[in-house]
Length: 315
Ligand SMILES: [Zn+2]
Image (cartoon, rainbow, N blue to C red; front, side, top):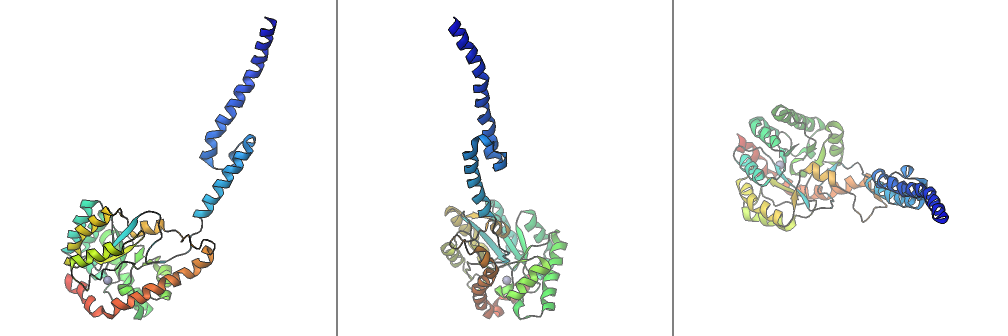
């Protein structure tokens, strides 16, 4: 009896200690993953704290580097995300048709608007924005901006921005130069002056030149990859005709549609050269410019065929 009572007394003394010991990790456990701060981790679980610190630090470090990139022809993203972009509108018939198709599928796209067409069709601009799409500045009258004076370029961009704001109340964050023709200096200037990111493309079905829905569909399906920015023109009937099948086939391949700004928000430095990320950040816009600039020369040479189209379509 004595033994048992002694043992009971010993147990009674031990029990609070055991239960306190049992509570301590229980209390610390939820706080450790929740805060991820090594300072919040109790000293008792030092190895665990070290492990937490070790895992927490690289997570922060990997998301930290993001260069001052202002020009994009595509993005590097983890998932199967792509951005459909439609230029030169809004067009009085074809843009509403396209909006219906996008709405039916719950797809958000990006429209690079020509100022003259914005002024002619402000109600369509309002609808584009109301239905959740993004809009960007595509100049006032679709000239080759790279050959124009700063004053003329400013006029083209400012007039269009004012027309867009007047139509829908939204100030665009993006611009796309007609024919992709915009010098690196102009890109930096437009970013400084208007905050614009310069958006080019990596998939071009040349729908302005080859007015054939099947061609548009096949090029887009063949060339689209994760992070692609796909160029097309909602002013052409054949392009809009191509969209239901194109969009459904892209979705069937697993692609998910986002706006350009959403795609840019997911953009990551390419993993191939993480060590040079900081050094490359300064030079990457120049590199990014080089390829599209060459590409831009191709459509630029055919500008006579393209340029009158949006103007004629709206007038
Ligand atoms: Zn254009």
